[in-house]
Image (cartoon, rainbow, N blue to C red):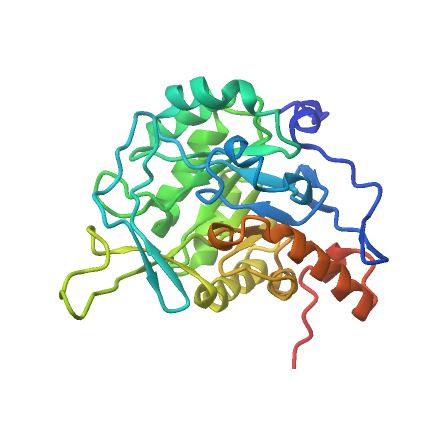
Length: 327
């Protein structure tokens, strides 16, 4: 990376100057995430906003600090057979299988449009082997993306997710770091035990931040048909009930790997949830499943953050990071 950071500023830097204002109270929502300055701690999570550009008519991206495109792989992936989505108590199960057209088709479709929306777009890379991660990262870095997120929840050739193994996760991050000078983050699984060990390995390998966390592995059955809710049986669980688990993961990573910035993710649908993640130690948060029902959710969340600031005398949202009061 250019020591001056010029490439980062051109693609991902947003002025931290003037605070946003809603409802008469001014709260500075700008945060610093590793080498990036974001105008808001809100990030649109990968997998819930497509490739970002095609949702520009239904989502107000000006309220976000960044938006992450759906993960892309070296070659096209068809994904799993249906059913691939199922509502469950407190959230949903998904077993889509990271369906995507492959990196070259993705660039052909979206590469020239990445600067057409008012938000820095981050790419998300995925593969079944380490060389595949490096290939996608190398190719996608030639576009106008502001950063790269590494999806470590994909199974490797042996069938186990990379993100459950600190050594494998480190190897993936090292491979991606070697082919790009863009800022990179690693998206971790809440099923990793201990998750702090995986976060530490990613930080050592060159990750600029970690996303905590992706979906948790879950299963559901229809008691009438006696069939699993998903064709692949096991899927990713997301939604409100994931939040306490992800918050625990954030606390552990913030405590045990103090040098790595954190994006909190899981069960966020209101301003209070954002505040919870910040207090736990996250610098920013990623909104995911809530987009499916409320694509304009960022407006109410942003207003809620300003109301919270007014009530509690908070001028800078960043002052909340890691600031929970112990008993």
